[in-house]
Amino acid sequence: MIKAPRGTQDIYGEEARKWQIIEQTILDVAKKFGLTEMRTPEFEHTEVFARENDSSDVVNKEMYTFKDNGGRSMTLKPEGTAGLIRAYISNKLYNNPEPLQKYFYISPVFRYDRPQKGRFRIHHQFGVELLGVSSPLVDVEAILIGLDFLRQFEVSDFTIYLNTLGDEQSRHNYREALKEHFKPHLHELCTDCHRRYEQNPLRILDCKVDAEHESVKSAPITSDYLTDEAKEYFEKVKQLLTDNNVSYVIDEHLVRGLDYYTHTVFEVKPNNLDAAQNTLFGGGHYDHLVSQLGGPDIPSVGFGMGIERFLLTLEDEGIELLDEESIDVYGIGLGEEAQSAMVKIINDIRIQGFAAEMDVLNRSLKAQFKSADRYNAKVILILGENELKENKITLKNTETQEQQVIGLDELEQVLALEIFGNILQDLEDIGI
Image 1 (tube, rainbow, N blue to C red):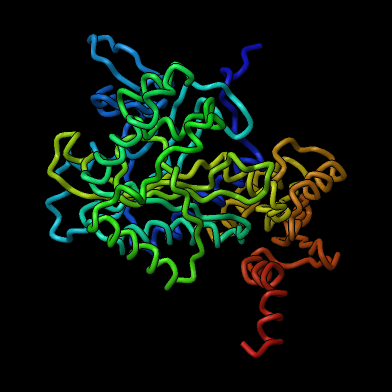
Image 2 (image 1 turned 30 degrees about the vertical axis):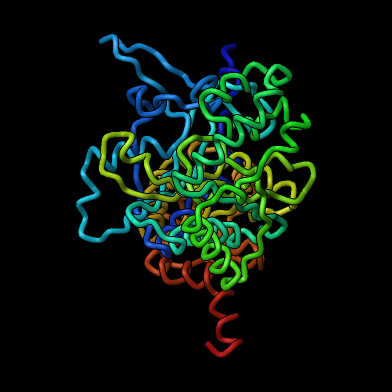
């Protein structure tokens, strides 16, 4: 028996229904905030992700890179932002007369990493990118979009961690301070941190191996190296969050997992200790990724959310996504002619907008009733040979257990009353 590759999973049944709910909610949130969907290829030219001197573990250790039949180096996308930016440039979307362009994506991403709970080698991201305007207002809107998504599922037990990496001069000042700080301790740090020291010493602060090393705990903090302009920018971000009743915690060592961030960075994490490593969503501001990929110098801000991890958070918080699954109608045809006639009846019912199923195996009446129970059907239709000759059909309401024989020409009207009758009565009771 061939199994799914290590670090992958099959999604079906109730689990697939949960994904559909999440994806529909993403679409609803996107509509409210004016986000346009962007779908990009599952693989890109490697240079889209492996940019010069990138120190992130994603680029250095986790990418699926291969040569195609033409000898070109291709990479399965390890994150959603770079591919979206490539598409933004390729299609010259920066020429849109509206300066702020707002996109979202739902996409599989591929990372070769040790599989663990909530982390697969193929996992899925919901991401948002706001392109074209550098402003604290846009940074805050990105955070508000993510929070609105969480609100739809009544997820509330989390903390927002916030930091700033400042502008280019601030980042330069901070990098030099970190290099000076870590230089005498470098021999005590892991080999990955030796690479990070040369490429981007900020990444040492995010090292999982050396997180408890004294030099990491005592490292300089970003706020001491900000320019006046960067300080003013961050103060505005904080004020806007406060104005919108958004609480946050400043984390001076928050640097995020990729190298292109400037100014605001943020992570939203559940407070449940069992899920402490499961960031709900995280991202930040980046000024130069568009130009690094060959486009104009355009500022941006965005975030990414792992859907698998989000599902774990819902599970940890006891939040149920699924009601009991049901259909509107189950059709039972007794005999070959009645069964053939039931095919048209069920199809007409589906055209009317109802969810309907029928038996196709000509099983016994008892077996078909059991099948209707498994589908949790609201109404069961029973058509025998004699009823077919008389142009009639038996309708049973499974909630009231009432059963009636009606003409086939009455079916559409009676069916609507049987399925929506309780809803209509409830609306009438409250005066609507």
